[in-house]
Image 1 (cartoon, rainbow, N blue to C red):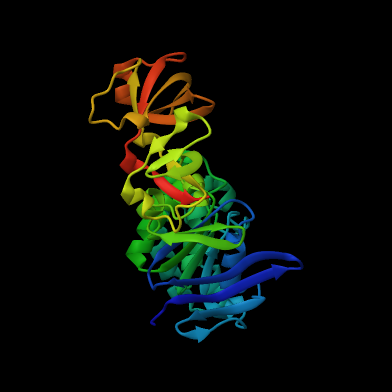
Image 2 (image 1 turned 90 degrees about the vertical axis):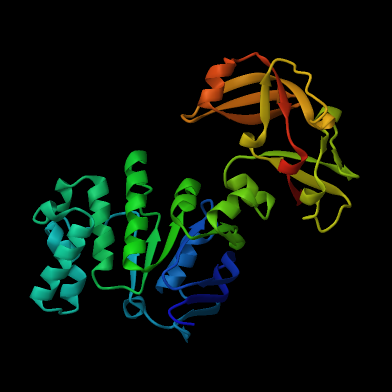
Length: 363
């Protein structure tokens, strides 16, 4: 089993509230996993259970094959980084980084060596003798990060460490965290509500909802093949249509919203009876200016005509909100294609969705 972290049937209740429900998960040594989900889904409670700050109501936490439920946080040798930097303002940066080692009565020369190594690792050597209030938010969080690494933790737990920082700083710092994790070969368990953050840095994403694990997989699989409607809705952006399946056509209450779905997409259904929900990512929808008569290679049922209600510039993509029958459809195209098409609000457009590009869920 090595230095794997294993959660078995883990449950945590606070009075009548069940924060974590019967969770089973294995985190491999040197793996970077992210718990992703909305506020109140149980991700921070799970992290606190792993850290030892909370005691499980039921279930087992194992590390290196040993049950650690009753081991106090100080004895688990897990580093922790919180959203708040929690640095001592009266201490220098070097003193903050070396504080944990000092408490363990490590010789001063060894502390100084370790502090210098870590400061160099995050390019803060020249800030060594400054105090936390003299540093920027991003620099302070880097100090908090290496302070947690100073004592050579076996696992590093991070609870929304970047949420208080500006967007550009967050992007840069999350790249540094991933680089550190790879260089040090340390296991990291990261909690965030930011899907971009989770998808960009983790080896696997654990999507949580109401205390349950909805799906665990590599970031690209979470995005391309969401296992539930919740995951498809929470991770990225999706358009959803509900209807009844007749053959390979999803019949909606409005005929203009009927769609043909490929047999491969339908193969994921456990049952073809009753209502089903289909979804399509905005970037998978083809958009043509005006009302186009498309060739026979396009599935006729999936050719739709609508009107652009809103156009939003999002950098590399441009998002259009298209009114189609009694529904609004989100369509994303590249900025380059948008410039060529000169689309604008009030424009008539033709939409097309390939039968292969739908995701299908049991309603």
